[in-house]
Length: 145
Image (cartoon, rainbow, N blue to C red; front, side, top):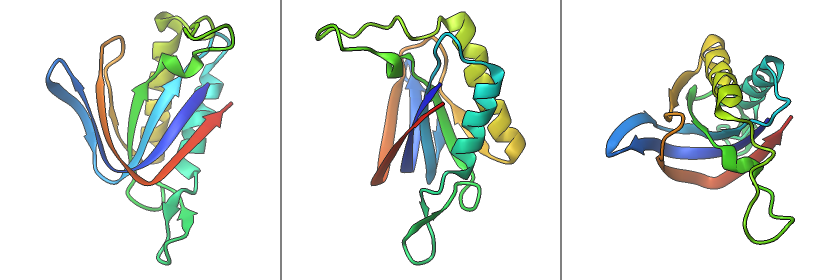
C-alpha cells in the first residue's frame, strides 16, 4: 500500500461538476493499493497518516501530526501510484490492485482514520475525479508499507 501525503491549506474533490469531498487545513492523501495488501496494511496506513509529524508546531517546526492539530483528512483512491515506467514511457498498471480488491481497503483506511477521531472526506471510487489542492509548504511525503 502506498500513500502520497500532502499537507494542505485546503483540498477538494469534484466528480462530474459536483463537489463530493472537501477539507480545510489538514492532509490530502492519495492511496494506492497493490495485489497483496490486506486489512492490516490499511490499518497501519491509517495509523501512519494520523501520527505523521508534518504539521507545524507553535514555532513553525514540523513537529505535530494531524491528530494534534486540525484532524482533517481527504482520502482519494489513486491506482496510478503503482504505475511502472521501467519498460518505457507508457506506465504499466500491473502492480495496481483490481477495484474489487482495492475499494474495500481504501474504505478501511477511511474507517480507521474516523475511528481514531479524524474528520475524513473522500473522493469517489471508480470515477474521473478533479482533485484541487492548495499544498502547504509545500510538504509532500510518500508512505509505503
